[in-house]
Amino acid sequence: MSRRTEVATIDLHLIRVLLTVIQERSVSRAALKLGSSQPVVSAQLKRLRALTGDPLLVRSGAAMQPTAHALTLLEPATRLLQQAESLFAPQRRGAAFDPARSEALFRVAASDYLDPLFLPALVAHVKTLAPGVRLELMSLSQEFDYRHSLADGAVDLVVGNWLSPPAELHLGRLLTDEVVCLVAADHPAVRTPRQWTATRYLESEHVAPMPTHPGAIGVIDEHLAVQGRSRRIGVRAAHVSLIPPMVAASRLVLTTGRLFYSRYLDRLPVRVVRCPVAFPPLTYYQLWHELTHAAPAMRWFREQVREVARSLPLRAAADAGPG
Image (cartoon, rainbow, N blue to C red; front, side):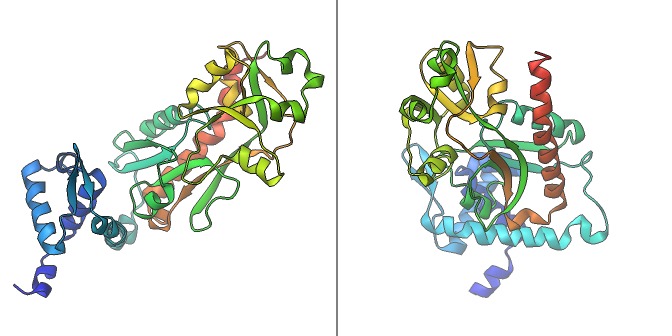
């Protein structure tokens, strides 16, 4: 059989198998995600290996890892599937996205730094309107290359804060939040607020979340660097929800948005104080790639993300009560 004849026999499902196997890095997980069986996917992987002349997945210790060539196939495979979906999408026939009947999969990467209840609120809201859809929630981390993941279709949407969001991505502003400091109830900044100066702030020991993407230092430290300043970070924490208890039991200072702090004021011996260094408001965005920009399902989903994010200040105020 000639090479041209072999290529002519490839169907779109085989491309989807290729993409899923590489993303999942496991034949069994790929089979589960595809609604297939492990023997069937193994046979399809064998055919893909013959077609590409590459093993695609190789064993690395106890896990499987994609080869360098396999990683180069992610973007063209994603584009091919997106183009096929666009060609035959319901909107081409005049039909709109129906959330009540949809079984779409939405993949979101976000940090709980915006608000610890943001993702739970988003899940509850979406599942109320679209009970059949599936959600995959991923954590932003220094190891997670969100730009690459958006470009190769591994994630649909990223939610976070940036001083300058990447220019190649679409963005939607969700909300802005005032920068303040969270300290223990008996911290000197609470006892003697007049002495809580910029110098005292910078000399204090700070706790900060780990950067949320490769090469980042965080928006607070980015802004300080622009001013030629720096602070002393004593603790970096990957788990943001663990930071307020650390603050309550120490002299650590946490600098972030007021919205994040509001959830903890009635639960821990902590206080919010002004930040003596002037910071611009934190701005949170949702970012997405051109690959999903026109998809009706994704347009609907982005609207739900925006609606839930904008309800957060109201939820926080309700939780805080009249006092």
